[in-house]
Length: 318
Image 1 (spheres, helix red, strand yellow):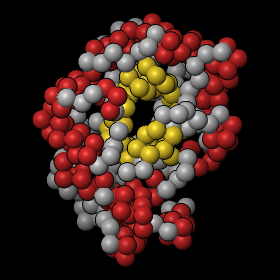
Image 2 (cartoon, one colour; image 1 turned 30 degrees about the horizontal axis):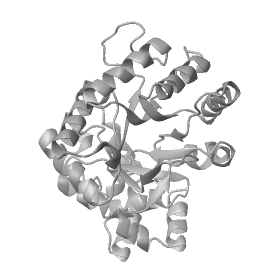
Image 3 (spheres, helix red, strand yellow; image 1 turned 120 degrees about the horizontal axis):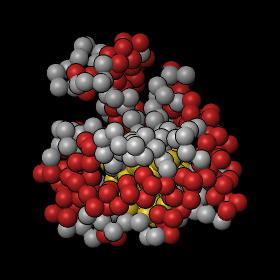
Image 4 (cartoon, one colour; image 1 turned 45 degrees about the horizontal axis):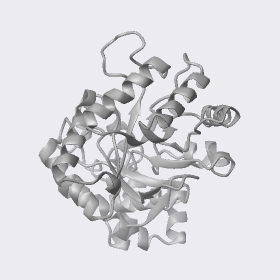
């Protein structure tokens, strides 16, 4: 497993990581989570992604329970959480915000559910137009000063918002954001490749990308309809079928290219994301151990992905 620096920080994260979005607390219980975490660790994965809002906090509890039962030592893994949405119903100051009150209480709640003294990474899960960015920067910087997190960053922020936060931290001698967690895949490229282009060199931004398979569309599994039990059958994910139909011809060509490389379609799509030098780690999701093992096979596809093939994919999904 290759390891990359997380942006300009000294922290090294595995090329592929494992996240709990959608699965933990819904499709995955503590027993399966233990198996998945160990399979990932055995493959060299050292970064495990989570968020307060996943399964209303249950995802953090499951990951924390699994890690304790596995007996992992704290220095052996990197773990994250993300804060913004809140899990305390519709209480004012406790949802859809990055104000100081919410953030300082939310990090304590996440640590309690995870059973940890600190997380390695904490993210502002979305931007908050109603809270001054300076207030948010101070709160995240204080989390780090208090030893509750080691690094902080953002998720689905714009380039201007990230730069504003970084410049406030720079002027005030506060802890700067070092990473962003955007969606990035063959169908969703603009933010990573165009909007953020200046940030990699200017502020040393690192990326921990999510949805590398576009909710399964890039595996080719929707080419012949909607498989039973797939994400497209679940509430809130109906647009997956529309996206699959719109990109049917391109995905069929992706299938053909994968067959020529003797890798799966999904593995080739994952390898394409990992081949971007600005991507520190690609977050994998899986509802089963077999699916995780399949996705980790993308390391083989990455080795076989030549610059010429990558350009073909770039052009195909331009």
